[in-house]
Length: 214
Image (tube, rainbow, N blue to C red):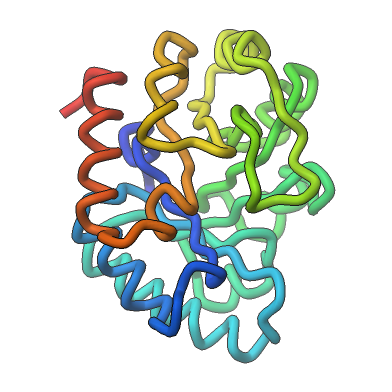
């Protein structure tokens, strides 16, 4: 699936910590109904068979909504189900190696915290960068905070689109205005909310206002 930078406007990352007895399929559908523009399936503790089954279900849902669907870290599952792509961190497989495995047409996102990491990821074939944590976050124990100056510097240094990630909420997202990002990646700001559809709509409207895109 070819994607445009506009697809990165509101990038939802799944986290079963927030399910409260509901299915992942159900909450992802609600985020899509609310206008999420990109879905990343992130599973750190699920066995391979369950992950595979879940990935197929969420992939089918994303296809119905014509929204890009990527898998966090697990290149083998992305290959097996022909997902739109993968997102890898600095400690995971290098972007160039992922590209070699997935082929030229898949979306590859890479996490970056410094200008050097960002430039290297771009050079190795990343399609977009996830930069953060831009605010303190509870969803990743090892997340290092980066300054908004560094975020701006990364956006200036690379020609591929950059999204901000980490601790972003509807109340602090406007602090990122003018940084050069094309979108935000969020977990609890969508999936941790009582009304996922409304929370997603609200965030998307704020992003449209901030990035000037309809």
